[in-house]
Image (cartoon, rainbow, N blue to C red; front, side):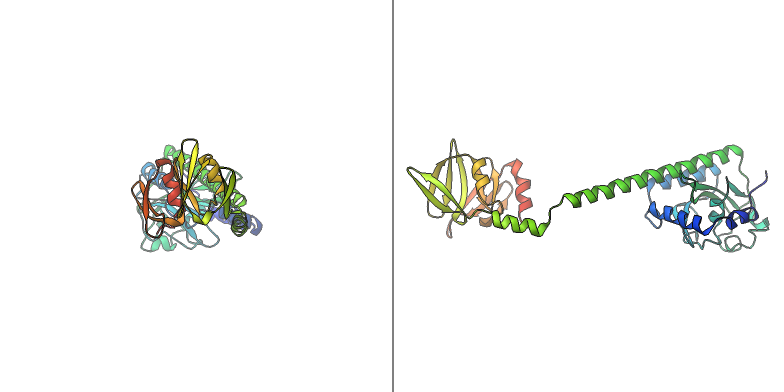
Length: 313
């Protein structure tokens, strides 16, 4: 079967205008595939290529401005970061269908190629261009051997199918990266300005509350409160000096106390974060005065939130 040789690519290379090449490279960069780590999907397709073609070497590579970048590889040495002008894949990429060189050592156009006369000793090469949905060539899927050989037609057709699969994975990968980029942008848009938020929080935090005691209102500085305890329809507010019992709910007290200083640790308890001295399993130990401490339980549904509030190292 006649093969597409290096000579048959010369007209294609000459007609690849600078503007078309610039657009091709722009599209290639948009895929964000050059010089990226290994990925299972591409590795599997390279392995399948080697198996179908019965060759020891298979590559998925992309052609940059001046070099070849290998994304997946089975076998072979010295095939990464090849100059574009000697990479067989450069010419496979520009072929109309499939480039097959049965014996490079006997091919007038490839016999002096460094990959043929050098340590790689390439003899057989077959490659299919990787074309975007718009028809731009990005690289090639290829199989290589160090002995001459020839594929049969079912193998060639299988190689074409695998090349389309490579492009399909490339499209899915690009879509996933784009979605992640848009998600990050949305997160940034929704994230409030930290400085402004801190300023607003500082300005709005209450420093005192008034509680009703019999026929009068008593002012209590929030800095004096050690903890709050639910007691049926009442709430006990504990300070270092006294306990105040008010008709209220834990939810209401939680909303009135400065959120930067207090945390709900249990359905029955709100504590001052600055007074916590230790946490052991499901118990918080905190100071109620300069000489006294108290242990209170931490509810399972509140523990994660509490730990996030603490400056852990």
